[in-house]
Structure formats: structure tokens, C-alpha cells
Image (cartoon, rainbow, N blue to C red):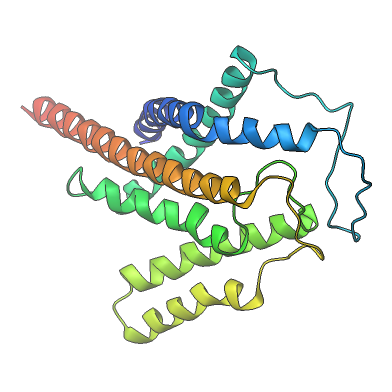
Length: 237
């Protein structure tokens, strides 16, 4: 069982990470590079921000150079994240195996809703040079929102009693009723049009990533199951 999960997650994570890197390189990264030109542009005025709403500029912080360093760094990060998510999906398949490969799309969309769509409603993706609330508070809200969304979807989809489904809807709404932490002053160095493009590109890129993750993991898991069942049949014969 562990071998099947590891194989499914490894190959799924690799293919999905490469797809995500490709999409980011041609769609998301150019927008980030464009925003960095506004962030690094010399200005004559002094920024004054309220506590917790400032832009952080660390001259000593290392960042990959444009070109192969940025691509390698992005690919490595994507691979770690993709394999982790693929391990989660493969583990869930052991509890509720997909009957068809196409069901992987539904699992992928569920992952997208949990880890991207729901948190984005309160904390949209930000370009460099955007004022933000305290990092720890944002991380706590993001993790709480992802967890509550996962529990809510499980109750809504898999529970049979209507009261549990209603409870799932309530849990789904709780983090959004509380609200995500926001900076005291909303400010961005990049133009609003560029911000809008970045948000759309980030959402669609992640949606394609999760759909690919669900499809590939479901196909590989079912394929491994068929091979295992064939081996059992041959062994009994």
C-alpha cells in the first residue's frame, strides 16, 4: 500500500510540478517581473505605513537571478509542494478509490477549492510591493480556512444526513464571516490593471495544476490497482 501511494505521488508530483512551472514561466512570472520594476524603482518620497502594513525591503535577502536560477528555484519549490499534495490525494484514494479516471478532476477541483479558492477570497495573491497584514496572522487565517473548507466539503459531499450537510455549509462560511487579517493601509506600487491580471493568472494557473494533479493521480492509482489485482489473480492461479 505504501509503495503504491509513494509511486503515485512521486510521478504525479513530477508531472504536475513541470506543468505548473511551465505555466508560471510564461504567464505568472512575467507579471511578477513587471511588478518588481515598480518596487525597485527609485522614488523621491518617503513611505510612511502604519504598523503591520509596510513594505518589507531587505537588502541582504537572497533572491534568485532572472534566468536559470529563478526557473530551478521555482521548479524545486513546485516539486516539493506537488509531491506533498499528491501524497494527500493518494492517501485519500485508499479510503475512497476513484471509480473512473475522470473522477480525479473532481478531487483536483476539491483541492483547488480548499487550498486556493477559499483562502483567496480573503487573501488574494499579491504582487511585490503590496502592503499586507502581519504574516503570522495571515498564515493562521489561511491554514484555518483551508482546514474548515476541507471539513465542510467532506460533510457536504459524503454525509447522508441533511443536518450534517447544513453543518458543513456553516463551517464553510465561518472563516469568511470572521474575515481575513487586513493591513491598516491598502497600498500597492503596481498598477491596478497589473494586479488584476496577476490574480486571474494565479487562479487559472493553480486551477490547471490541481486538475492535472487529480487526473494524473487518479489514473496512476487505478493503474497500480489493476496491476496489483492482476498479480493476485495470477498468484492464485
